[in-house]
Image (cartoon, rainbow, N blue to C red; front, top):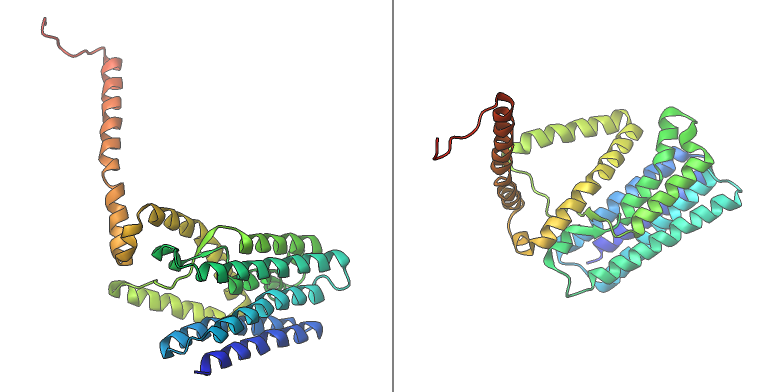
Length: 284
């Protein structure tokens, strides 16, 4: 029963230790500890569900730890590394923390709503806290890989931080990946991609982190489109993901022949007009 809370406390310790390393100038260790905190945060809830050890105090502890790990910790890391002693930088850091706390408060409220449709469990409202923390640290990852540049300039980091803060409190749907499945026929390809990503992480960890961040940002329009479709077809959410994709393909398929036929008809009329032809009438 205590194992999920142990993971949560370990994540909290990792996140706060990242602040200590950032203050000492060890940015690489600070980023690594935030990543570790994000991994542990993803594990504690799943372990609690697998062991049947989910408790109310565990949920509250997880929410408070997230506010520190993914709100306070990244903001302080940015302040110590990019905005040291800057009043404007401190304001940006405060705004990010406030946005993250508001995002977590909204998440707790929506999670406790018994009237929410079933399909909402597969989507977050806004960017979740761990993803927001990794997104906001992207400029520091770029600095570790390529050195000092415009990506770690004070204006660029301030704009990026405010952009990520806006994503966390927005109503934009993002996928929670809770019901993501892999078809057996595609398992080998997925394993090859995972192996490539792991090799990239071991060889170029910061480039791997930036690639993951880019893929996550690119998935948002697809998650928004999927959320719109399932909101208009709530009964389809009880089907498997492959069956839902088949339904969407069937809905799009009838439109294509009609478009071709209409295009062919217009093209035929234009060709007849160019040749001076006309259809025969009864009088002819």
